[in-house]
Image 1 (cartoon, helix red, strand yellow):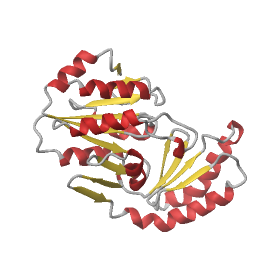
Image 2 (spheres, one colour):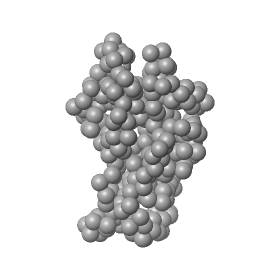
Image 3 (cartoon, rainbow, N blue to C red):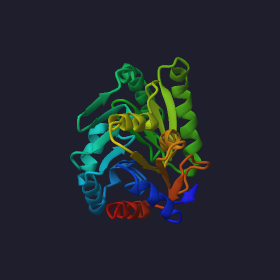
Image 4 (cartoon, one colour):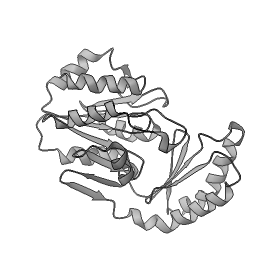
Length: 262
């Protein structure tokens, strides 16, 4: 994996011969720094203006693929005319595109039971944030004391394991977060492929994907054997399949500013 700005000449060569650039980004940890609670992750206005300005150019299309639910990520970003994928691609919306995974709602009753059990079993622990995202659940433990993290993981596993065994839900993990999703083949990689297919008529299409977490590896994986550009933010994922890396959100903003100069 190369540091993107160190290998900028090669990146620039590929971008300059592209007929159209599909720019896709994660939100938390990519467009905003990771913070203690999800509601504290507020998009900076200059970052919002960069997304808007890039999307206004004929040679670019912009999308955000997030683990947050669709209406939440739409409200947070607040840029009309771009593509949004929520719940890791279970629901997507953008110009001439609307998608909802038809099987995802079948897990709703199981998610309700798991949510109630987690809420009851973990109520005494400080720092737990349990999110119901309609199509999935997220258990954040960033604020939990280090001594209690293992207990959180064990309780989560005991509650969820019976549902996983019966293929009623599946479990994924990210940075200080445990997630319960419907047992369907849907992730950020599948979302990237769906959005690329949406632009299949574009000549010399180049896709850029930027993310920081384990859940972004699915997107990096589908782009690794192509001329596309995959970028990991930070060093939170060992053995990442991303082709390039950037240090932090500030460098993501610098990269977007450089794209404006193309």
